[in-house]
Length: 448
Image 1 (tube, rainbow, N blue to C red):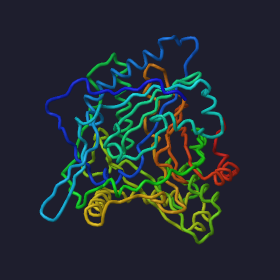
Image 2 (cartoon, helix red, strand yellow; image 1 turned 30 degrees about the vertical axis):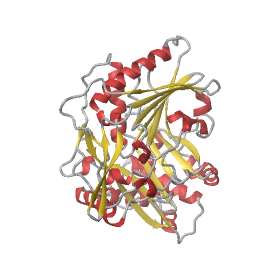
Image 3 (cartoon, rainbow, N blue to C red; image 1 turned 120 degrees about the vertical axis):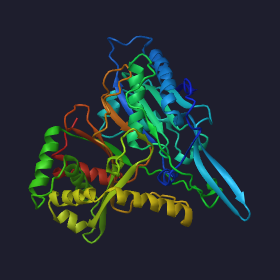
């Protein structure tokens, strides 16, 4: 991999009424010790249409488009900042986004002369080189965005394609805001750099939260990134429909409306648990990361920029999970999702604030969600293949190094459309080997 160039981009201009500071909410603060969101798009380059100016034009247009996008998403051009207060015998601090700090967002241009699309999509697993498609492979946590860019875009040239890798500070955005930005960036790119955009972000970062301690540099624990095997499993529309029908048939009640995603999540939970060969008395859990905006009262639109996520966690004995049909697990997930209303979500968020200001700063370890867990993030509703950047429709979505633990699953829509889904699953190698031999799981998977 060769680093060809890198440069910073600031907003084209600034509106007079914009704030210079956006204070972090409790949920934002809880993200400081984890990794950024990293997700990228893989495009093929047609030899009949590519010219010597294809990549230079892409980079030039991307640079100008980014400068316009940052006018609207202006906090992403800044850096995190900490302000300390000394009052008599106490010291406190507040964390915020300083929208004027730093050199701006970062664009990286890199290339490799021996990696092709087939090496990435058809090797049977996600190769380690993909981690270098984001920030040139540098590993960091969100807290490091005091000095690092909140946003970086890496353009990596492959033998027969190009990969656009986006990294954003998870203390500033969740998956919904992440995709909102990428969609608008592509919209600007494809509209001849128009300043008018279809969905303007809304910033609402609330009140100032003072932390009753200082010296965050010294308490920010960094955990070694687990060395796992990543693989993308493809589920066709037909497989998704079959799973949903099976879950409905076996759920034990006619009053439960099992969704396609709940059926798929249940299959994955059961299959990974089976691959781990746990005893019947051990506990296992499935955690779904969901967009909380539409569940709030009043609901917020997806244009609200920041972290608005919640989790649905279902816990049971391994024997219960594996001893029941697929519909049993799907019904449990369905119940958990239904229980996530505005009051319960805001209660959890308030609890984060209480913990941070009374107990101390949380430091999530590698086991943050608990042992024997399956965590499912991402969303099949994200418009992953809408952003084209003049390259046509992407042919794949890949994740970076961040926030991958044993049992982490990221859901993305598949490029074939319909109800098809791609799941990127991260597991210890021994468990991945067993999973790939599990016919109850693999019969729903479409092989490359």
